[in-house]
Image (cartoon, rainbow, N blue to C red; front, side, top):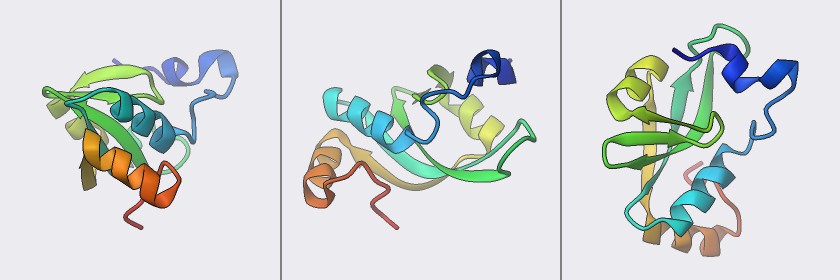
Length: 109
């Protein structure tokens, strides 16, 4: 079970917050066979934003969320966070989008 303390260490802000697009993009750009997902999540913790745009990595039926630094079974992640996918990018597509836009995203907005 996720605890808020896992995300916010000892009352300090997680240094990864706000970097989901960059962290996910960097990961996918270095790992063939991974997919960068841009989407929207519902916050299950009840504190802060009710929903937020977010980026995560999908690979072999698992989700890696670099902000939480956790790996989830895909169905658990999608059910817990009510994940809504906007767009998926392959390794090659991520490299092309980074060159085209000169940033880590989001690119579809």
